[in-house]
Amino acid sequence: MVRNSIATGLTGMLVYLVMSGNALAGYQMPRNLQQGWDGKVQLGALATFGATDSSAVSARTDFTYRGARLEHEITTKVYRSSSESLVTRRNAQGEEIRDEDGLPVRDMVKSTTNDRRFISVQPRWFFTSVHYAFLLADAEFNEPADIESSTRQVAGVGYKLWKSRRDFISAAVGVGRKKLVQVSGESEEGAIGYVGLRLNRRLNDKIAVALDFDSDFGGRNRFSEAEASLSWKVRGPVAVKFKYEARFNSNFVNPWNTFDAGVEAAMSVNLEIEIF
Image (cartoon, rainbow, N blue to C red):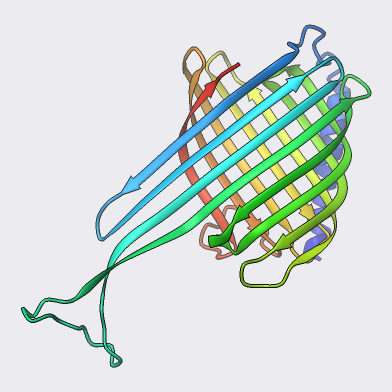
């Protein structure tokens, strides 16, 4: 029931996007759309101090090369979080162990809670001004999250309604194969379906919003990633981006429930720099 509802909802969203695009005939791919490279880098960091010290750093790069009919997109993501805390030693009865001065004996415990490294490569070939065929290959590594490696290879078709290189809406569907190697469990490999949705909308010269959704389904382990962001251009190529992102697996269907153990979610403020 839940799977059918999700599939129906995603299909409805895709049909809506395509139909909306056909209705907006004026928003064709601009003939003067800049060809060549463009790219941007995001950087973020967080540190807290107290009973437990924690830190988190994140980085993301997006590079796109655009020709007359070809578009190549390369994305990398890095996120690492760790914590340090003093833990009091206890005996078998649960009582605190104290030193000669009667003070509790404490040990420094360090842990890495997240160490995600992700890379994605996606070439696209436009056979009309808005329709394209694509290939997608990506890989993820995150041992603290029980992912020794996760790789996907997908082929499919998509629809991209252009206004400019930073102002567009797109939807893609495809089929492929996925292999997941867990740190503590068995490997899983099999065929998958794929859905990707993306919206970049510039509200004015300084403010832009973006929505991204990426999901595979059909295998024993289903993975989805959603991101919503608002960026404010400070000066020149530099912008401040407020971002909420969530990643979830299998039967989890509500990315906004941050108390669910099956979701990894983060709200962050990042510095974004356009370098091309």
